Image 1 (cartoon, rainbow, N blue to C red):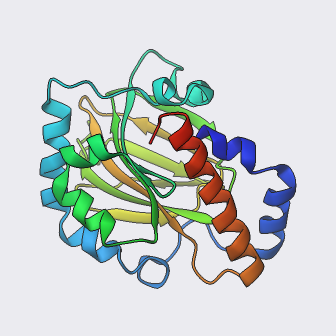
Image 2: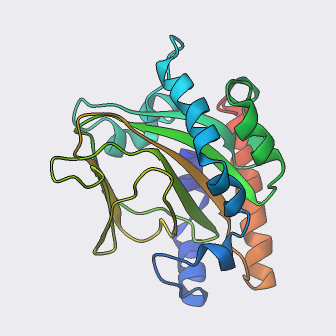
Length: 227
């Protein structure tokens, strides 16, 4: 996915910003109706994710997969590990095989471009940053949300001035081009499913541009052995 940063130039970003004016958090039913498939099955997905976490097979850190992301991943000696199942249209067969139920859902939802199980270690802080490309939206479904000392979910997403604390089975659809950062203020690993999905209702020229960019990123990911 670091190739997305290279392919999405400032000119492309300005083009999208000038013509897409949506808030940081979007309506799930309107913008990603297939989210219900994942939300309804979150406990089954959680079971697969926890089996991955508890397996002897290692889960790579984000910056080990994509070194360009070290600035937000390798910052404090705590782990942010990711199991990539799909990378901009390209399946990762070995990881799909580890989560067969989730893999079936992803196959049935072609609007999902990328899919990741995200494992955030206790105390981990992901510094403030912004995604580069408004042609996609980020869907987040929390699968394991340990509580902090105040009794609230310990993982906090700060997004454009607002804090979001998602509990087990809670979901959010958001635009990652807005500034955001994350803390895990609990004593256990937070586990979440992250999906990048097509932004709906874009003008035709932006849809075509979005398809070209994401297809190019997928090809680069496969060439580099990520997918």
